[in-house]
Picture 1 (cartoon, rainbow, N blue to C red):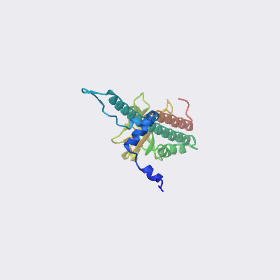
Picture 2: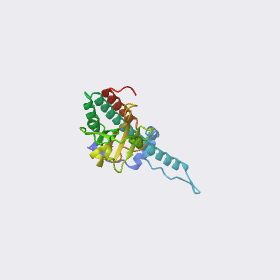
Picture 3: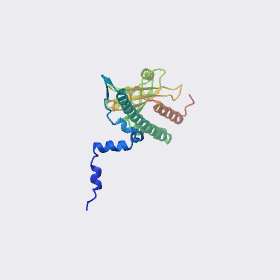
Picture 4: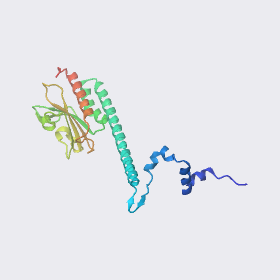
Length: 239
């Protein structure tokens, strides 16, 4: 009595080339139903004689390369979308923390402590221009005074944000953490048109965390929320 072949061993045995050929012959529409396989196959270099090559070989080869390129672009787009969604979630969490501050002192603590964790950076500070420049503000860990006109010097008069890859960060912006900072984002805070200029400074030890050309919409939105919260607790009139 002939025993039946073991199913597992049948699956592990690769089909012979003539079996593949016969299957494709019996199923002429197989590649039409599975066009993705065309990108995996190596087309033959078909000669027509007299030194003439079949152009179909080059057309298929070009299409395969185009499909590979499109797949790469698709993966890049997916990665960028995921990164953007993660950034949005972080900004939303930061905004909620700012809005839930119970006092002005608590708000400063949220900005200079909690935001660093929520935004995945190493340090966040508030820097305010002052006539009596004294660097670190007494009694605070993340609030610094900077010389008059320094904000426009760093950002430019018509710019609200400046992203940079720093060889070294300024001590006046990040204090003792400046030795860690390899890239930073400086965002103007428009608290009051009659008051001193200020910036929200974010620093990271990752040199690629902030860089020119990066999208800035979310950080600018965050700065507007910070400015509005500061204005509310300080009872400042509208700008």
